[in-house]
Amino acid sequence: MKKLLLTIFFALVSAFTFAQNFWGSSQSNITIGIMGGSNVAFLQAKLPAGSTVSNNPLYPASFGVNADFKMSDYLSIRPGVFYSGKGGLIQYIESSTISGIGSFDQIVEQQFKLNYLEVPVNLIGHIPLSDNFNILIGAGPYVAMYLSGKVMTTVGSSDPETDNLKSGKNGEFKSTDLGASTLLGFETGSGIIIDINYDIGLTNIIQNSNPNSTIQQLKTGAVYLSVGFAFK
Image (tube, rainbow, N blue to C red; front, top):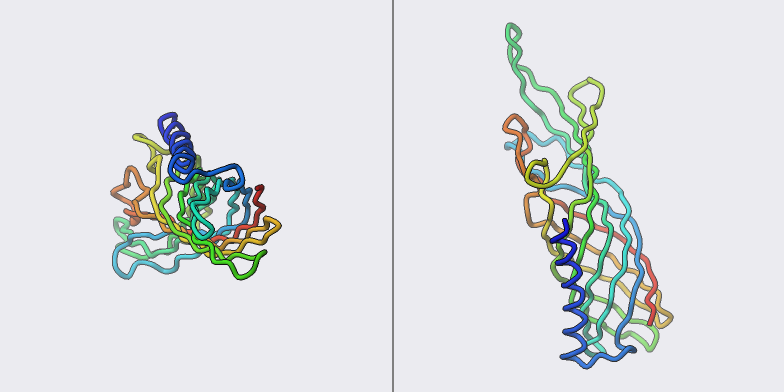
């Protein structure tokens, strides 16, 4: 965790230094934004063919800060640090065998609630529609640090069981997640920003797969609406 936090710190410092040295950014070309909103979070699950019943989203929160470094009137680079809730609700059919009874199928429902500290770095295009209104279009990579999580599992008609999910070498989930993000939004001259973002995870977040589990691969995903204010 310490190594990742240092990586995040140096990434933000490097972005700031790069903007200062190569684009001659002045204070007026640097904007600090505070953003917050709600996610439509989902999981990309790898299951045996025909076993998926449904894959439903959850609606956790997301909030954080970013720094927008203007390269020109039409282009900027925007790193940020965000708390991002992710996860999803997965239902699938699992076959079981009981000695003396035989094989039977039952529906398994697993609700994953995951918490990440996410660091996106987006290249933002600014399309002016007027002196006080810009359309924003952006894309870039992100790295996310796993903070905490839990899964609530219901098998057939049994009572649900909740388990905490740990990360790292001895945990169930990896400590980091890598992905890509895109955004579409607008910014007013007074500093109000509204973004619609789409994040797609590119790595399997499961660290140690349970050989008895149907789910062997999970990737994150989220669509979220955020509203914020930019301080110039």
